[in-house]
Length: 428
Image 1 (cartoon, rainbow, N blue to C red):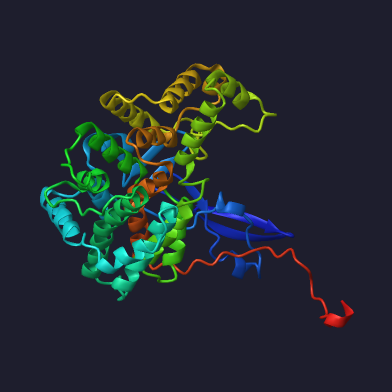
Image 2 (cartoon, rainbow, N blue to C red):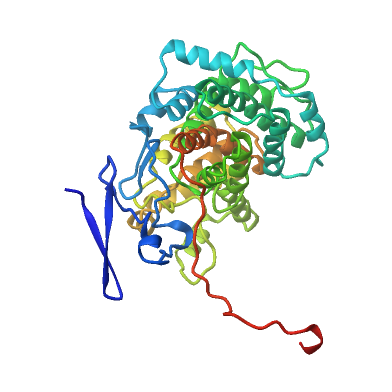
């Protein structure tokens, strides 16, 4: 027998079906609430308690610190898989065979060429333009060079659009960085893996040879995996709601980039470095700032500790901490900012105030450290996040279109003026 919830409104009862997910999550289906009740809606600012869709892509349990892609634990994927395998898994639902993965990679490489006119668009941006604005604009501009809409009923058309954006997006991200740094643009090389080729496009010096650093490559590969999807967050929900109007994949991704730009979402790792720089400018006394963080009357907030979703620990942070330690050791960097970060980490992991409240360093804390160690400017941190989140956005857009979800159209509770008569301008 189906489970039901009973809603009592002014003495009249309404039966609402309860939906149960495969991980025993419960949701009250209010799809017909407005029509059944003659106009009653729910009010949920920020949609914190609202399920906008049924999805088979990512499972997240913040209370227990669990994150899984298509049923696979993030810990196992980060240890045993490569980023491109995880891309395939998220988008198509299963881990690829060796033949499927090779074909996928070759098809992506075949679509990595970016029209020369895109370079002209890039040239039009001032060097000081924020990389996220540049990346969002360039991604949206891809529509001009691929004007035909994707036939979502054709697997072939969907696949072509997917490999096209996966091929071009790393190029646009790397070019955005090189524009910022005043470096000539680079296309990488066909002989390298997906992530290694991205590193080459980013860091190859104009007159030098590129040499793969396996420790850096492994760290970035893991970091991209950890960022690949995170359920119905702000940018992912944006991609789905833009796509629900039957907007194309590229422009939907561009909208997701804009949503990710905000400091409360993708800009968190940038905020970590900015906080560390402020601590350094103040003299570098980490104990002073830990005390400020514990003082509820002090406006200072410790960035990169705790998480809005994870109430216990961020499972991604445990994985990337090891990678961050390896990168710092391998590169042997002497940096006051990174020294301050390590001191804050040590104190937070030992201080009962932070331990009792489970305010552990999160993935943004460690990703900021890695990017800083690689010499990536803080303005590029969020574009790096976007590169990792790309397969999740694609998977969510694809799922939404294949499920033929209706156009997103939230309701509201109107709290403005009631009907008023118009006053002529000479009487106001």
